[in-house]
Image 1: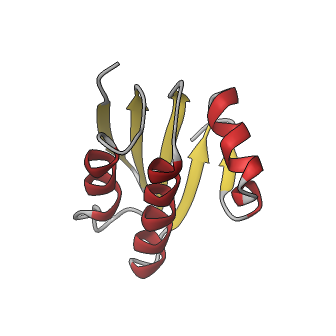
Image 2: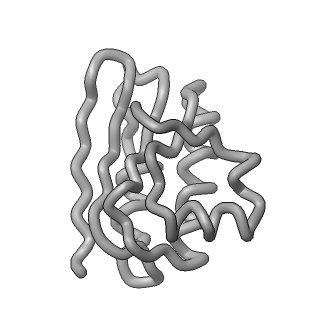
Length: 105
């Protein structure tokens, strides 16, 4: 499944909606969306992972890079509605305690 990334800057939230598998080949595209030029008025970066059926370690590393980029820009960072598979990966790596995980943006 090809990766699709939609970006929406609404009020003070920069919402990145991801659809498809995040793996070694597709994670650079997600990395660019999370670490590239963040909107200056964004106070929180929210990454909707509800439509991601698979994420490998490179995808997890990309999320960590996004968290660091958000902190550097004085923004919050949250994962929104991760799929069961993604949540399991985050729990196994114990990153569910590092990331803010929300039901909605």
